[in-house]
Length: 234
Image 1 (cartoon, rainbow, N blue to C red):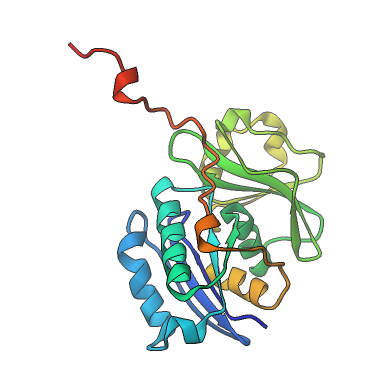
Image 2 (spheres, rainbow, N blue to C red; image 1 turned 180 degrees about the vertical axis):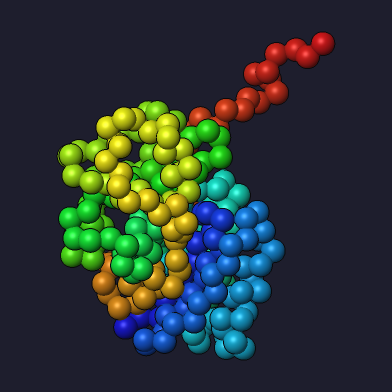
């Protein structure tokens, strides 16, 4: 087993956990727009006086997509900790982490078609489609961002489970998604679930040096212009 420190701040949840040989220490709080003020204190509580270098082998970090500021908090904290102790980092998709949270809570069944979503707060949502089978999530493709009306439709007629805060737009989803018979809007990434899966080898690790970890913004066109592009303001 590998000792894994996992964290994610892509959503309203500020979640941090340490998995060590079957023992899990978890802090999971709903702290919208306050992650940066709490995450280091949560880390101190989890370590409980132990040195990071003596407690952790790998840092696992949710890289999004999600809140622009939240992603920067998680990645910068993971990078700082990894650099300071020469630890490798594993970046994981926050949308995928939501699926494993739902699976851990027994909200999913084998063969379920799953749409994991996060409200992008700009009248759009982040999402990823995939299948839950054998306690594993297999995405159809990479994460995307779109307006609710432009959601890619399900690849089959089987019932769909919608996870995450993007469910608030359900009444604007394409009519073909009316087969979404199960909806769990309160599901968020859970660092305890990810730390356990990675620590026991149930999910494979893709280790990187700290400098190589990057937020997964998905949204390429942020919608702002440099001053030189804005024209005159009289």
